[in-house]
View 1: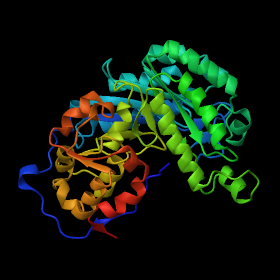
View 2 (view 1 turned 45 degrees about the vertical axis):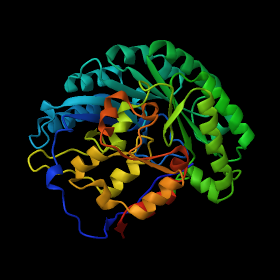
View 3 (view 1 turned 135 degrees about the vertical axis):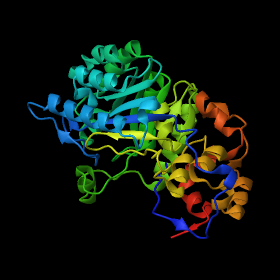
View 4 (view 1 turned 90 degrees about the horizontal axis):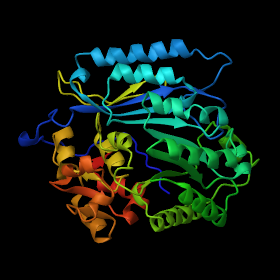
Length: 404
């Protein structure tokens, strides 16, 4: 499985903006919102996010006040004009935002004044305490639940530092599917000591249990985490080799397809267009998003001087991690440059001939793109094939006409 990363890049040659495609704000009449709740009941051994163990008396009211105050600041800031834009999606992440009170969620959503059709996601863990609060979260406006399952193996859950069991995972998935229209959950493969056969059995359990969406990630050993330290000291069985991990990735794609899932992003699978994560497409397609909370960041257009904080590398890396790819119209609108100006045409032709990339080819596109974004492909663009998605790390440095 690929892990997409990039270093800062500069243009190898000067570019001239197309007068006909100057940067506009036409596509920026909406934005997404990410809310970070920093507390967890315990720290997972693989996680390097900004998080803190939940204190005996968590400062729920103080943190809620701070989140609402920060949110109002951005909503009222004239440079961003958010009061005149529509909220496209809201995502409560963490940490573990299901540890927040339903009242906290309600206050934030009331501040945003969203419409009923907006996708509102809450991350939750499959513990009994959080399970009992699901109905309350549904009542205050959560309409999509993202569960941190990670594994159905009790031994591996302990290695990962998870505080739930496989039995509680099965229970909360079934319970959530009866409460929420949209339910997704995360799984991790290439764990210490995990075999390909073991992953295949676990994957089948996940696919059989899943609703219309799944996120499946390869384990990443992040420097400084307890799991990384234990692994470097050889206190754990070795993680899968790159070849074994690639076999697990390929098998995951094949098994998911056999169960009716489209692999629309490196780690994301959906049975229907409606099940695709609208919020994540905000990141992948370079749309505006507001980050609120101690571990959040955002990307907003300054409407007073039409500035956007975006790099070519960012638009390419995130766009080409999806089967939707990079629509020509969006790229030109956001950068003021033609797509051909930043692409190595010889390498592009080579990758197209090798069956790794598609150019101006919208065949089967509806399987990989939410309906509200398909119109952006009317002028074509560049997108990966399934084979290309698996080796995107190799393609990207050669595809861009940039130098370090």
